[in-house]
Image: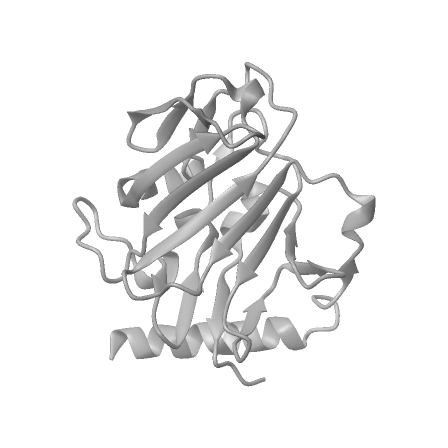
Length: 210
């Protein structure tokens, strides 16, 4: 019952957001440089894992920490405990060493070589908390007929790049629709001004009607 109430509330919120003309503004991503380009695979949904790829470039030695929502009130939620795998690669596909140094932090051994980061992070609704439980409206879930993403529960940021623009591409079934208050670009990808904006705006994908 609780989950149904939460989904009903979120659906109403997202329907209103998507029907608001101001929200439908198209951003021409060809005119904006995006240091972050996320892809989230929603086609594999049976194991409760979000499969995330981050394409990036021009990192410097100072950009050597990847954080999972370790800012403000989000830091206390420890979303890093839901990470199941984390790997980094260079442009040729060679693996770049990384290691976890705190609950929400991964050290990037040679950030200037990194072109791609791949990780899997479990949803919060159906996963054992292993710590302080996360409220449904602040968490995440991936089911056969829908997926709910709160930005702080799926995405992270690289040290020093907290305030750069971010683009998010979702791979999902063709019959699904996506609702969010975030802007879109000319290809339908989601764009956010920075990590704070992405973390603060939920995304609902599935069999939506509005």
